[in-house]
Length: 446
Image 1: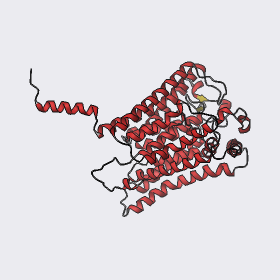
Image 2 (image 1 turned 120 degrees about the vertical axis):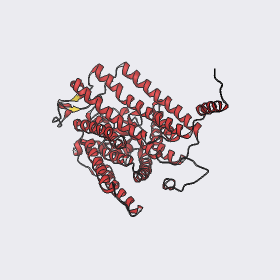
Image 3 (image 1 turned 90 degrees about the horizontal axis):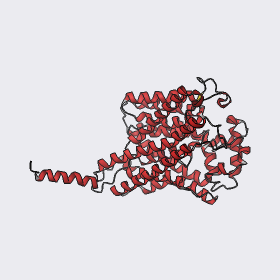
């Protein structure tokens, strides 16, 4: 038997010590992997119980008041939610053990709208349950872990997985994966019907695909990015979801203009480069923001925007009863007479401004606007460094928010809004380096 040298002993002790106190590079890798697993669990929670339901009981009527989720689907959903919360807590503890959190005020900005909505729930007799902790805890985990850009790219990959699941279901069981007849409305031109996959409606699938699309541009290598992009665009076209399709068109056009105007250019001044980025990204954002704010406020025809005018007028009228805090996140489920006023049993306000006013009041709207501003500043910084995905996500988010609002749910159903916002707000923040200060551009942006 050979002898063990002192050098080998020291090396073994060093490797063992890293298991107890991992080095920063290893910690970042584990943090990124942990956040990717959280995203996968959120995707499973939103997708698989719905798939179990539709395979077991058939496609339920859209927005039906009858509960049709089988026990297996409920158990799967509850277990996945518990796993998500448990992992988020473990990751938070791990991250806090590695380093002290920085920019805590910015974390507060991200959490504030969620807190305001749950405060509105308390005021209206709707105490938050354990499920309400999932998104806030995940945001805190993201903040202390500081995941890399791969976490954002994972959202694009999950979007492609969503497209594959939906299209496979449509091919294997078109009676389950497609909306036909009256359910398809005036969009019956699609092949065999509208692609809905395991989700309640094709518009729901369209939202998921549109919000995933911007992060496809961060996928490497190029071949994988092209395949992922093609899958999402084909599925999105098949959904017939016009709001999501419009958002996707604006995202792709913005991306193309960014490549055309900034790709390969030699900038004589950094100010000129920033001006071009601000213009190319800012114009679609301002247009979408204007549509989101003024469409519901100025629409007087109840039939306007596919009968959304009626929904907006009814919800804005009820918002004036509680202007500061709104009626709480469970308002749509707890008001049986609301369906008659809205023209249908809807679970959201079909516009983010109207929806947030209804459930959280002016307080939530103001805090959400501050969050969007913070994320916009961070996304512009990242775009200047070559990562345009976060800025394109803001474009997609505002364009779908014009006529939809189910994506801002405070349960895991809203993970494609709140977790990307948290990831973007966290992205690019400098690690504490007390021994030196680089004075970089990133450090100068709060």
